[in-house]
Length: 242
Length: 340
Image (cartoon, rainbow over all chains, first blue to last red; front, side, top):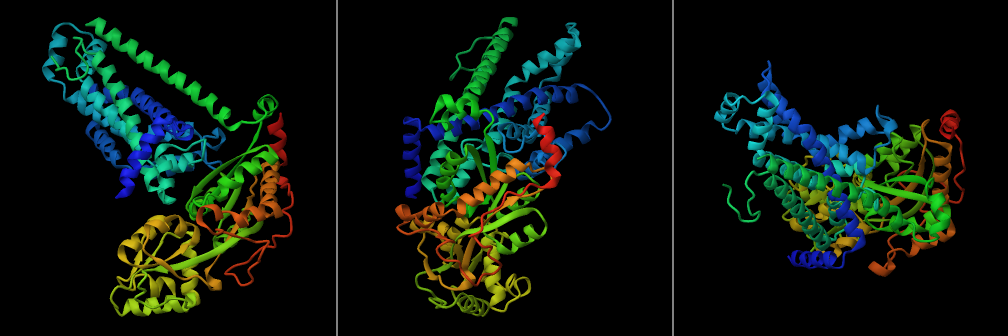
C-alpha cells in the first residue's frame, strides 16, 4: 500500500524538479504516440470515408475484419513488424529496428483498425436526413462528405482519442520494436515495465501518473481543436453544445 | 460557418508546427545529453560514432551492472552502446537474426546451441553468482541447508502427497533461471516434462518475469528458485528467506559472445570483441567484484578472474584468453560497398 502514496509523492517530485531523464522519456512517449495518432488519423479518416460513402460488394465483411482487428494483441503487432524490419527481414535495409521511427510505424499499424472502425461508426451515426437535405440543397459529392465529416466530428474525436490512448499505453510494440534502450527508445510504458521488474514500485506508479498527465494535455488539445471546428464559438470548458 | 472551419484548420496547423518543433527539439536534445565532455572536439567524431547493440536478459540488466559498465566502455572506445533487455529466448533470437552485435546471457545450454549453430564467436564467461532456493520463513517442507537436489526432491515428494502449504512457483518461461531449475530437476533424477509439469497443484508455472514470480510465490507462501540480484532488489517486499544457496547446480554463470553472421561488418565484430576483452580485463573484473556493495551491502557477482567454478552444467570458456579480432570472409564485399 505504501507504494501507492510513495508513487504519488515521487510523481509530484519528478514533475516539479523536471527530472531530465524522466522528462526526456515522457517527451519521447508523447512524440511517438502523437505522431502515430496523427499518421493513423490521416490514413483512417479518408479510409473510413471511402468505405462509408461507397457501396461495394463485401462491405460488411471489410467492416467485420476491421472490427476483429480491434482485438489484435500489441505483442503480435510488434512481433510481425519486428520480423519485417529485422536485419534478416525483407525491410531490414531500412534500419528501423530499435528506433523511434520504427515505434511510430508499429503504433500506427496498431491503431489504424480501431480508428477506422470507430470513424465508420461515427459516420453511420450521422442522421440520414442531413445527407438527403445536403443533396436537395445541391451539394456536390465532396461538399456532402465534408459536411457529414464535420457533423460527426465529436464521434471522430473519440475515435482519435481512443487511438492515442491505445498507442501511449501499449507496451508490446514499444518493447519489441523499440527495445527499451536508455536515452534512445525508452518510453514511459517500457520504463514502467523495467522499474516493476527491478522492484521500484513507487517509481513505476509515479511514471504511470506522468503518463496520465501527458495524456491529459493531449486530450485537452484534441478537444480544443474539435471545439474550435464548431460553428458557434462556445466556451470550451463546461459550455453546452448548442 | 466557413469562418469556423478556417479557425479549425489554423489551430490544426498550429499543433502540427508545435509537433515539428518538438521533433526538432527531441532530436537535437538527445546527442546534447550524451556528449558531455569535449563538445568541440567530439562534435565531428560524434557524427560517425559507432553504435553497438547488446541484447541481454532482464534479470541481468535489472541489476544495473551494465548501466554501471556502459560509460566506462563508451569513454575508452568512443562508441555508443545500446542495451536492450528482453527474455533470454528473445535475446538469443535477436542475436540469431543479426539484430544485435553482442549477446549477454546466463543459460549455458542455450548458449551451446547458439555457438554450435555458428551464430557467435568468442564466448567468454565473465561473472557468476548463485541461484537461491527461497521459501517461507517457517519452511514447512524443512529443506533448509539441504543440497539443491535433495531440497527439490523433498519438495516434489511432499508436494505430490499433498502435504499442507507446500507449493513451488516456477518461472515456466524458458528463461535462463527456468533452465537452471530444469537442470536441478534432472540432476535430482526427474524428467521435467513427464514427472514435474502437471504433477499436481503444488507446482505452479507462472510464465512471468522473475520479479513477478517472486511476488506470486510470496503471496502463496511458496518456494521458488531465483537469481540473487532480483531477490535482493525485491527483498524489502518479501517475507521469504533464502533456504538453499550452495551447490554446483545452483551456479549461475554469465557469458558474453560476439554475434557473427554474413551481414555483420568487420568493424562491428572487432568492436564487439573489444567489449568482451573489456569485460574480462582485470580492472573491469575488479569493478564487477565490488558492484552492488554500496546498495545491497554485498557484491552481486563473483568475477570469473577470482574463482573459475569447476563443475558447471555446461562449459566455461577460458576467461584468460582475449577475444581475437576475427574478420569473417563473407563481410569483405559489404564492407567495401559501405565505404563508397
